[in-house]
Image 1 (spheres, rainbow, N blue to C red):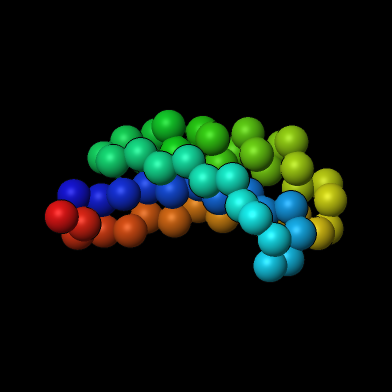
Image 2: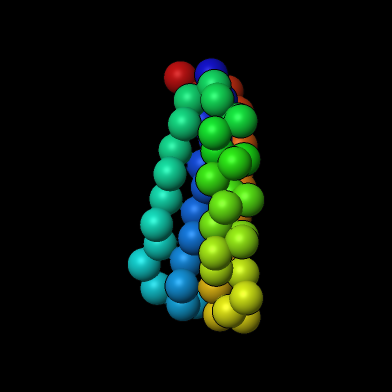
Length: 56
């Protein structure tokens, strides 16, 4: 099973907001793209999309 994770971190080393979905890359990718649109204008913000495969 794959876990898809979208992560937004507002300051380096600071707390992060994380959304996680099992076997639903569509929702995770859509969230990632929305967060890019909302927050990527700030150079301190980091937005990531991670697919962590073979989780059981």
